[in-house]
Length: 95
Image (cartoon, rainbow, N blue to C red; front, side, top):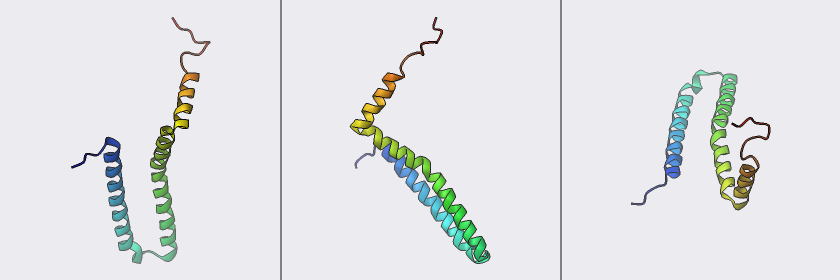
């Protein structure tokens, strides 16, 4: 049996949790859909889509940042930023 790396396990667990939350939300929505008016359904749908998008932003940013840092150009930029900002500022009192 092949083992998964730590980040792969985390990604799988996150995907499973997200799927479970989405399934619960969809099931609840289907149960309540008949009890809400058309306007309330639209507002609720927009709010839920917005909340889902806001919840997904950190994962998307983390994924893109991770990908960019793995490229050769991303590694060079990161090293350059570390080298430029290393040490104490010139006006700092160091004893």
